[in-house]
Length: 122
Image 1: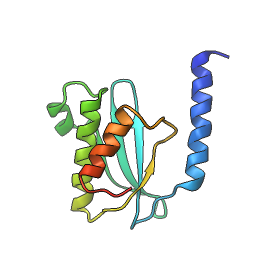
Image 2: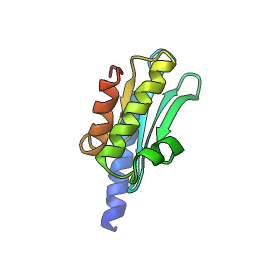
Image 3: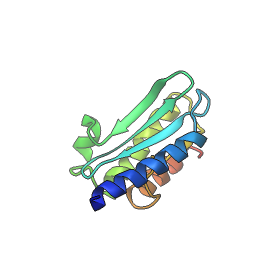
Image 4: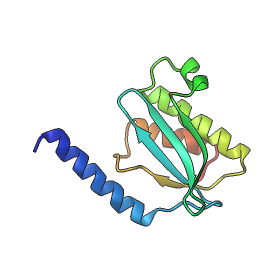
């Protein structure tokens, strides 16, 4: 089995294990982070209702104009800040953090710290 495939399998196992424990509600939605090589995105999800409450990605036009490259910590910080602003606009202050099987460091940590500074409580 190729090394890359092994990594994917391990991450999917971690993701399933995390999702068994974490679920979002309307009062405390789940912050799900998606990470790619060139982009990063985050969304607040109400799992009970099955709806996405708000989302921000480096593919969004307003973020793309501010950040030239979406695959670094600066872009992740901006995504975290914008997500916190949009959540505050909808009256959301507390969230459940879903790291989606990724390790909590680098871009993921930068996004989480920026969201915390913006007023979200994990």
